Every structure is written in C-alpha cells, then in structure tokens.
Image 1 (cartoon, rainbow, N blue to C red):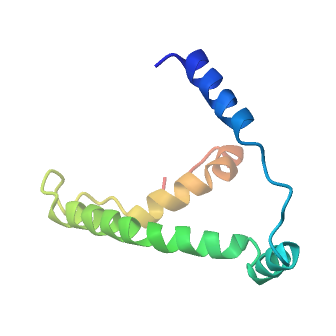
Image 2 (cartoon, rainbow, N blue to C red; image 1 turned 180 degrees about the vertical axis):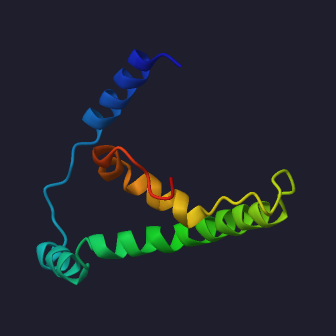
Length: 105
C-alpha cells in the first residue's frame, strides 16, 4: 500500500473525529495512583535474571568440555605435562622474562 495514501486517509479520519473536551471523573488521580503503584526499574533484578538464564548453558559447556578432556585419547596420559605448572608459567611469564630463565629448566 502507498504510504502517502495511507497517511492522507488517517489524517482525514482524524480531522473528521475531533477529540472530546470531556475528561472522565478523577482521571488524573487514577493515573497518578497507578503510576505510584508501579514498582521502579530494578537493574539488579535484570542482572540476576540474566545470570540465572546464563547458568544452564555455562554448566552444559563445562560438562561437555570436561567429558571431552576426560575421554580424549589423542594425547597419552603420561606426557609429563602438568596443567598447573603450565598455567603458572603463563601467568608469571613477565616475571620469568626478567630473570631470563623459567623454573624447572
């Protein structure tokens, strides 16, 4: 449908039915009471809801990666690599760079 034609029809219909000057009894009071009864915008509730929704996918990913690591047969179990030692070397790489030597070497 042509937007200009639709706009023209809507404006014609609005001009044919002017708004009434009559306001229902105690309209302002009802609106103000309804606004006061509405709770405010709670940012913490939004964060909590988002975090609870994200918990299930995170647990699923953790279980899948744990199962993959446990059942991975491509690397032998006795390679001598220790994950905790690799992690410590990575975190402290800048300190070891200043000493020009890695522990265990």
